[in-house]
Length: 274
Image (tube, rainbow, N blue to C red):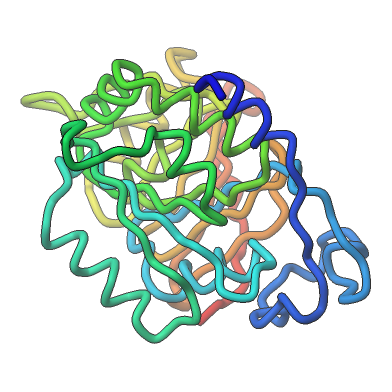
């Protein structure tokens, strides 16, 4: 089978979400469809799902991602392109997964064909969830485009693989956002565009993020969008916000837009997950 045929065929598949496959059922959002909550029904894998955090995609977020997949022991893949496949980040991912009933995998981007005999599509489309690392978003996007990983991630999203991450791993799914990927100052980066609008991670943790994000949206340089504090995040079904979550009591999510020529932050109070 040719590579493109493999992607198309795999993206057309479905996945069961039956009762026996929902070990984290209590984490599934109350406002999901009845079929997704009902243990006796199945949902098609074509539901597009993304789970992001402003910073700190830790065990609680991985646990929630695992719940969203609906699989008994979901295969969760870590994609550390933005961190240049940083070994410590890979170790940390395995440590976070150790206490969870998941099957952790890592897909490095700095590879060669002698040791990696499977294509990006064969690996990534076989997963239930994909966690994208933090790091340099600009480099991540350039490498993904050069390698064709961006195309495979779109196929994974269409298939129903749960995508997610924090920092560069949250920013990458939007049309654009603010990044520290270039020297000297925060700047704008264009990303995959699976989710419309813009995004700012680390909203409470890095002093320059909030004023720049508001300035860019206020002057019309950047589209309105979502800002996430560290330890706070959003679960999207399709391109709609389904649930806002956090792992600490003070972490918040904001929708930032212009209302009557004034930049406005609308607080989106999260539910606590652990």
